[in-house]
Image 1: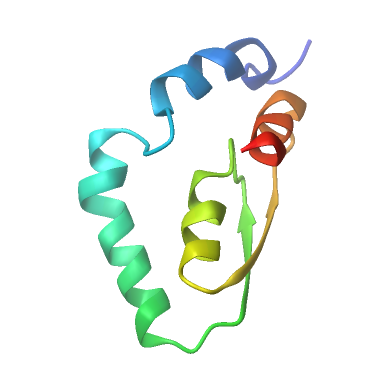
Image 2 (image 1 turned 135 degrees about the vertical axis):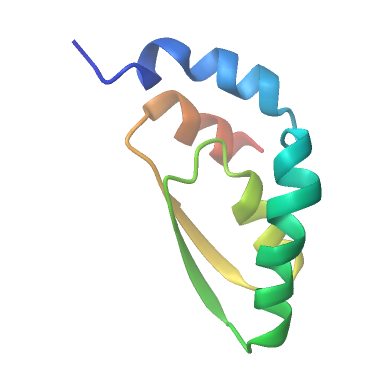
Length: 81
């Protein structure tokens, strides 16, 4: 039966690309990365990490990020990227 993500994972991967959609890139990411920059975070857990886009951004900011997601195809893509 699944939860829908198994069937739509590839469409999500294709639509997000490496940088995410406009709202993520221009609205959400600056706020989230601003919080990371103000804290002194060494580690982060990204629950529902999808294709790993934000984990990669955290890593670039010097944060050791671990991502979890229930959708195998999204996790496989995150590992490859």
